[in-house]
Image (tube, rainbow over all chains, first blue to last red):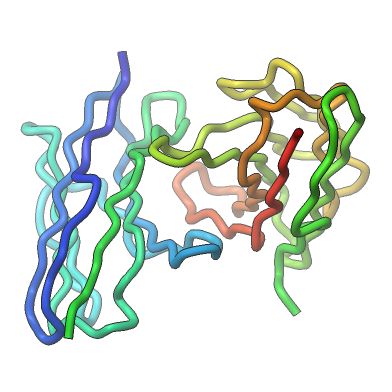
Length: 109
Length: 113
């Protein structure tokens, strides 16, 4: 079956770095997405990776290893506003998104 | 104003009632989607539409129906609501690209008593 795994919750300190991991199993693969969702709000797009490697976008970076079925989202210089849930979603061979349950990130001062 | 607007934002109803959730968008996207979100679960696709005449079932379409009235409007109906349909519902749009990002509405929180 198709499956996405990511930690349920993580805690980090303001100003620090945190890495949120995601492993996936899909029938075929057409890329991996990361979305941010603040409590009570809509998810918003952060990144899309389809090739192996690291893509950097400001304080946020996303990494993909297709051979390992693994991705991570790296957040640097954490700010209080980064407290949110981070959703990992893999796209299968039919271009359907398989979503993880999300990782709730708590930032402490 | 939001590019993807959902109404109502909150609704409490009783078992057996018919409910319609509406979605409208000003992004000019052809592709529209309805998802539900439950605590501890990933987003699950209910229905999606690639244009007015193209509507497709998602992984959890039972108990739901949709109508694509125009390119900009996509509504979700629960013909006879049941308590396990209590959830947060999101409408989303996407450009014509299969791998484009999704743009989500603000969500409609539905409670079925």
